[in-house]
Length: 117
Image (cartoon, rainbow, N blue to C red; front, side):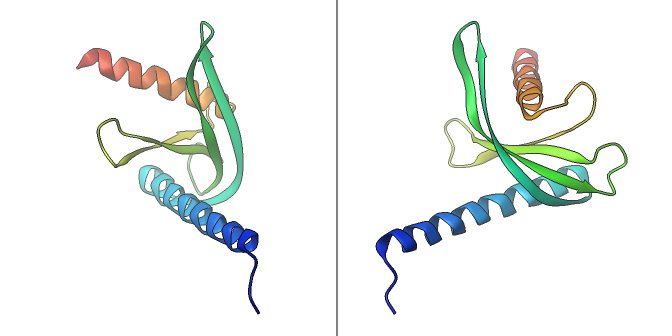
């Protein structure tokens, strides 16, 4: 039986999404040395003084046996001038209480790191 073009496109999108989630899971497990299980995805749009600073999907992972966090916010962004991606895995611990907080914290950390160079 032949599948419709729309169905095939949906299957390809699911496979791409599954691969992305798997790469993010591996990143969070490698960075925080514990098992992680995908929970859900949320969209974050971060602005500063009216200008868009970052926009994208943040994936939430339940953390198993982590000493301080039960949840992590995980995403990746392209590295300028490269085909590689930078992975972020921010734990749900004070002061980070949401995906939005995680993105803000990573932006602040990236800015601080760039100032030190």
